[in-house]
Image 1 (cartoon, rainbow, N blue to C red):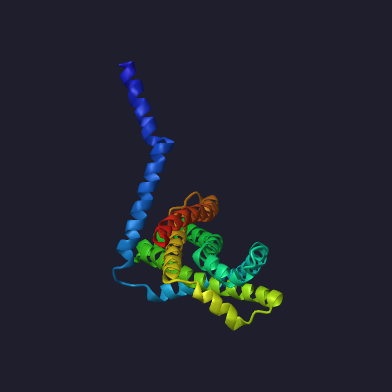
Image 2: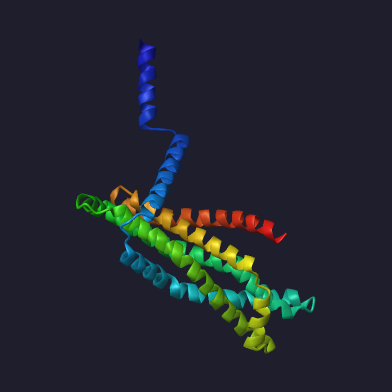
Length: 269
């Protein structure tokens, strides 16, 4: 009898305090349900068009200055660092093509996503986390408003739409930085620079960059919203939600970058 009682006590403790592996699978299941709910809520009326536009503006405006500065510096530095290697083979004329391919294929999507994950992802996590802690989300549910559609769906869609636009903006700003460096060093005209650069860009490069940017934007939005929407434990939970949104978002972006490079590489061979 004592053994049976001890066994039932242990089972009750395990039910209350599941192991790490169990918690991981429960979290993955919650994330899966969260994503499924987004797709269910996001494409069914009513649509929150005004809030979606406001979120798109906020995400773009919040990241524009930092992305502009970083993209311009990246284009200049990458060009300057690549010149000595190409000069050894007498191929400095390839610089515009090299910079254009590097920016469009990898640097622009990755750079934009990482900046947005730190700037936008943390803001979404902290904003929704504070709303959860102060019971504003519960108040919206009581007032017959769908908080998931208004708060989560709009932010995820906004980041998914805005990050691709910012990606091509980053590529353009990076090319301007490269143009400045090439013009000062070799006296290349803007017309010759962009003509050489654009000749090396293919439809596959544009498609791959767009798909990656959409995937990165969706990841930033869904991670930030999940962490904030499910936060708890007062102000500590808000800080944890903001921090987790950045860390997890950046980690997933790097994983997606590795997978996408391997996938799109199959079409280039």
